[in-house]
Image 1 (cartoon, rainbow, N blue to C red):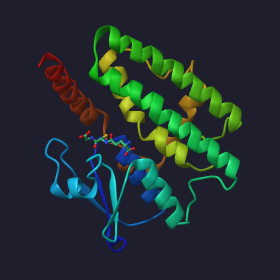
Image 2 (image 1 turned 135 degrees about the vertical axis):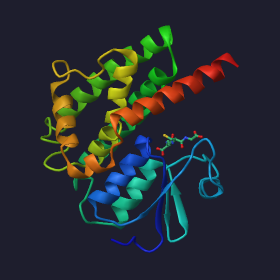
Image 3 (image 1 turned 60 degrees about the horizontal axis):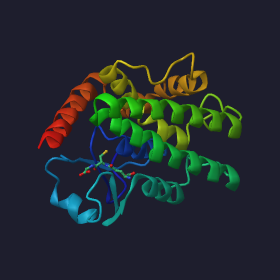
Image 4 (image 1 turned 30 degrees about the vertical axis):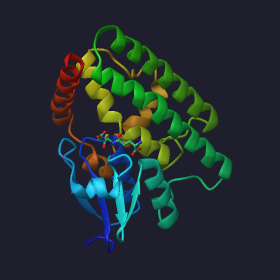
Length: 230
Ligand SMILES: N[C@@H](CCC(=O)N[C@@H](CS)C(=O)NCC(=O)O)C(=O)O
């Protein structure tokens, strides 16, 4: 399958922000060219296309760049109508956006702290992660009537992509800390959503392997402790 003329995604294999965009493009059946970035040695193209943040993902559509994963997802959703990722109902759309923002602001921040810190700071981040996860699960159960098998119903939508793209990272953090972050007994709904998500062929295709991610996470931790020591 060739790519849509000029459609390119600059990404990095371990980044959940990039994975959510890749999943959206694949679910909608939009062909694109993927450019892997080395974040320790960013390409001039990345700096050129995202001069403000210099981060991945960046989508280039016919020479025009779009940065920030949630902005990219909105662009993709508006431009390619097949396989809608958002509900039609405007209020439900707002709810999806609300919980996706909550996930990025709270759970992603907690995850990054769990990854980088040790000791008390890490314990605090774990506690906050678990509390925020429960809040997310309860909120979604109430507002989406415990959507099944996915967060917002029969098919995976934007919230599934946002949350699911981080799911291997959660398992890696459990491995690093030895603490269970997502438990079948404590978070049954969340657990079943993730199981349905992992079962999708497109997800198996795009999610990085656990072992590769563990090795990468160890590297990130090592670098973070060098920075703290310096
Ligand atoms: N808010 C951004 C976050 C993107 C982000 O944090 N990307 C990381 C990789 S996971 C990155 O490019 N980091 C490079 C850097 O910080 O220099 C989004 O949603 O796209």
